Image (cartoon, rainbow, N blue to C red; front, side, top):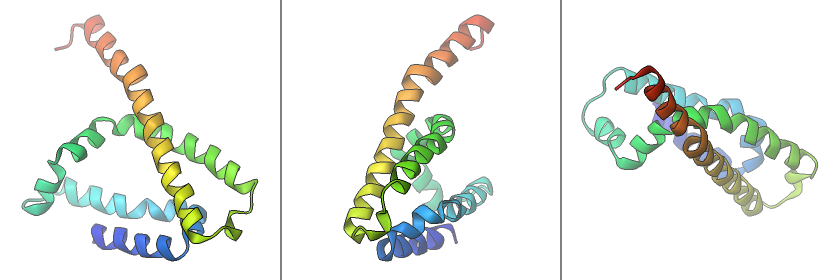
Length: 130
């Protein structure tokens, strides 16, 4: 179900990228479905997909991603609202969307390595947690 929803959003975005910008909350629904499936203790190909290094790394930095993504996206949406992006061609809109995703991940990694990880170490030392 979740993968089907992701595919549907991909088709919608490819045909009209501004739809994803306008309906961003709708884009999060497939991820919630995937979360439910993962929480149900899936086996087989889905479990092996979640054990890929990239998936595990995204899980490691997910808290930083959660904290930073909305702030970065608000800044990008405000930037886009100052310009008439609906008049831009679809490839340009997709490029802006891809750039936005890249900015979110760079900000996430920066926050993870400069804030979250050092904070975890400090807390473990402070409270002698192993």
